[in-house]
Length: 508
Image (cartoon, rainbow, N blue to C red):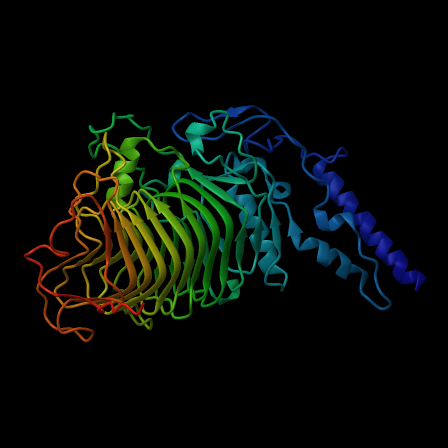
């Protein structure tokens, strides 16, 4: 037993000696030192106001990770080296940074991932510091590595409400080298990556400056830089977890193809074109607690772009996805349903049995947009407000609707509340016929936004489909319209289709 204890003590001495040689006797990284706030050398960093983070200060690198603070004691016949193996699974990438990396933190993160894959184990924890990491080259993960970030924050008003821009936490700046590239900064791929997790991390991109147009004079003059998706998930065929994340001024967020059980939970987001896009998923993805807001600023030219181009969650072939607690402001659509093509052995198809709990869309053109033939959707609570926030006065989007059916399908809604509807609450105009059923429908136009028509539905002629012989909307009770002068009909005179509700019988 004395021999084993001696071996254990010797291994620890060698381990700490190596750590101190690498870090210096004081426990700090040798030159060039890393600024824990900016990601560069120990100089203050101030990015320009077009979207950078302003932080200054410095921090020393930890001599040990948090697992190293409490050293395990070998039990009976345990191998002393196993204790160090346990410690080894928690790596700070800053300790692997070399001078040749320059201002790119991606190589040191890749070194950690390579270590976690090369020693026969499939994963471990990458421990990030509360600073900005700059990604200027691609990272590929093929193991169960967990990205453990220090969770940051932003004020409710976003960039404009916090001029000091001291947000704290771990941030990843996507480098300008990715603009116009098809290479994604982060790729998670292969079945050995099942269980990979990105937790508590924040992402931002430097975007073109706003021209700050006045309300009512906004044109399509601004657009985001052509960054690719930040994260790509490919052929994992199992759970990948993206939790407690913050996305500030991002052109495209997460692309998932043949993942299976992707879970996105508690995401504070500000996307410009696509937030989350899913392809060839056959096994219940989950999107829970998504809050889309103008964290990168709400200048009117940015809002104009978002409300004409952004689809927050795009589902192609997705079987039984679950979405809940979704809020989006200033988007073209919050949930966009599309048809997927086959890809090699992967069958194409459309989103089916899309289960949605609470869905709130504010200042958006559509809450649900369906372009997929045969999609099926169930929603518990749907709340849509269609105000065009770029106008000088309260004005509805001319084409605004809560449910927009360009492709045929079946939609069931428990409770539907709508305001500022320029087109109608429900708009069915696909080539083939759709069926929509609603338990309770309220159209509240009491504030009388300019451009509202006051129609519950609008429908176009269609050919019979597997779900309906003609466009049909069935209500469990008569719709309620709250407005000073509602039109005499619930649909425009040119509408072609059925709007039905059950007759109400007084019982007392």
